[in-house]
Figure 1 (cartoon, one colour):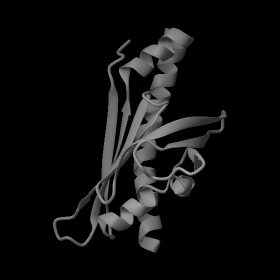
Figure 2 (figure 1 turned 90 degrees about the horizontal axis):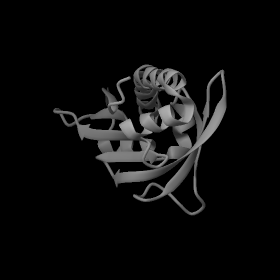
Figure 3 (figure 1 turned 60 degrees about the vertical axis):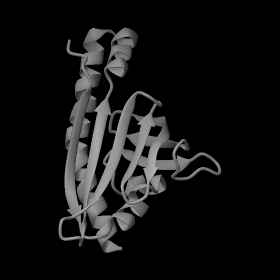
Length: 159
C-alpha cells in the first residue's frame, strides 16, 4: 500500500480583487455556502481569520456526519489562507494571485493528505479499511475542489 503524501490542487479565475476573494474564503463561517461536504464552520469564541486561530467544521455525507477541529496556518490577506485539520493531519489552502490583466484573481485550492495520517489510519483500522478511507478522501478532494472553486467564484461575483 502506497502511503506517500497525496496532494491535489486546481485553480479558477474570479472576477474580483485578491482582497475581495480573500475576505470571502477566510470567513470560515461561510464555508457551507460552497463546500460539497462541509456543512458549517465556526470559530472558537473570540477567534477569527488569524494565524493560530482554531475553528470547528461539521461535515455531512449520506453515510455519516462528523466534526473536525482545525487551526489556521496562514492568514495573509489577498495572498493565502490555509488551515490544518487535526491539526497536522490534512492541509487545505487557498492561494490568491492577481490575474495578468490585473482585473481578477486566480484562486487556487490545494489539499495535502499527509503520509503520517494515512499510516495512522492503517494502524487504527487495518490496511483494508484504511485503503478504502484513503481512496474515499482522495476522491472527495478531486471531485470537491472544482465544485468548491466554482461555488466560491459564484458567491464572490454575486457580491
